[in-house]
Image (tube, rainbow, N blue to C red; front, side, top):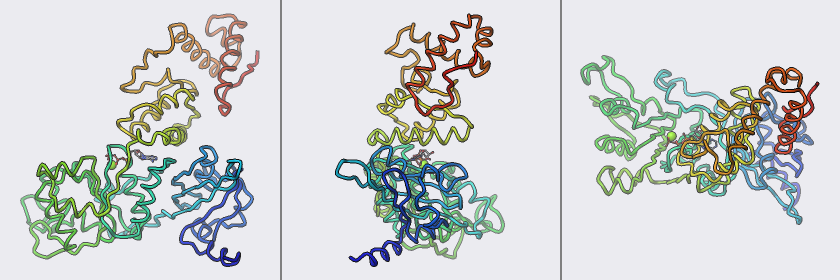
Length: 453
Ligand SMILES: Nc1ncnc2c1ncn2[C@@H]1O[C@H](COP(=O)(O)OP(=O)(O)OP(=O)(O)O)[C@@H](O)[C@H]1O
Ligand SMILES: [Mg+2]
């Protein structure tokens, strides 16, 4: 293909393209990316992503920087200062020496400009999934996302399976946001959360006087309100059997009746269902309708548990550390040793559990440096660490006290006075602590190795 034609192809791809060199410097973007982001090729070319990323900067984060750090493909969602939201897949291109020469980023636009104003805002507000970014560098997860993006454009029904906390809800949102329906509502319905006596009228609505206590004017159900959009049926296994057949009707005939209604309601929805149960077993036990199972299982997407993609753990820890440092206005950092220990933990609660542990560590530990000894992780016997004795534990405590005192009193004279030890001892101990901290972390610049006297 000649160069001119290649340029035409580059600029006319459906996706945005962002090309970066091995140092993180922008080589160029295509026209689609210019249109998506509102940034021009001229203003981005030649600029290092490190200077373009951060709060109130061009981008909230960068897949390329993660690719450079981890030396593997990365998928992540980011926002821009122009209020756009992107899904980015960054792929490294290696040279003969095995060094990254280029990173080719392919970008999908997840921006939602407005929701359908026709919806009953009160009902829908609590149902619309909240905003959240995701990130992964595992091959397994990457192929899950590829499949999700491929089917997002179609209207096929999707069944998301996976343990609790693996990211089913997050993926449902991403699918909706990369579909044609993204400007319409994404209605989340948790089948386990609505009382059984209400679920039929909540889902399908009712006509005036349909039952005692019913509104005279009747009420539209969530499936009706979601017209034109996507309905996310979470914990589908908890849907009572008689409603399973009504839902089957919705899928097959694209219509249903309100409770007490005689007029068929036409539906125009895309269905995504999710479960952490094994539906095949439930079908064999007669707890789930087989025909509904086949109707839902048109495109099955199984999300692997975190323990089957441990390479994601360090990246996720970094992602959540940044997220909660931003939230709590702190500059904390987890020690390498802690991250290594976390990589080998079971994570039964998957990413939700990991996120909670990182948030709790940031909120509850003193000092900016979070070590393994300080963190309480349920199910792990780390109150009394196995590898260290009393002496090391006491040293750890002493270090903590001295670092806190250093923050508060600043000079060795005042620290010594506050702790009732000599100034020489204070200076010696702090120098030793700060030296080891500097060895452990190059980026934590909150530690001053030399204090004023
Ligand atoms: N790849 C990821 N990157 C960043 N955050 C993630 C990722 N996957 C999941 N999360 C976060 O982990 C938490 C749990 O994810 P989510 O609610 O989507 O899980 P789930 O599979 O729907 O769980 P449940 O079965 O309990 O409903 C959320 O806060 C979500 O934002
Ligand atoms: Mg969920």
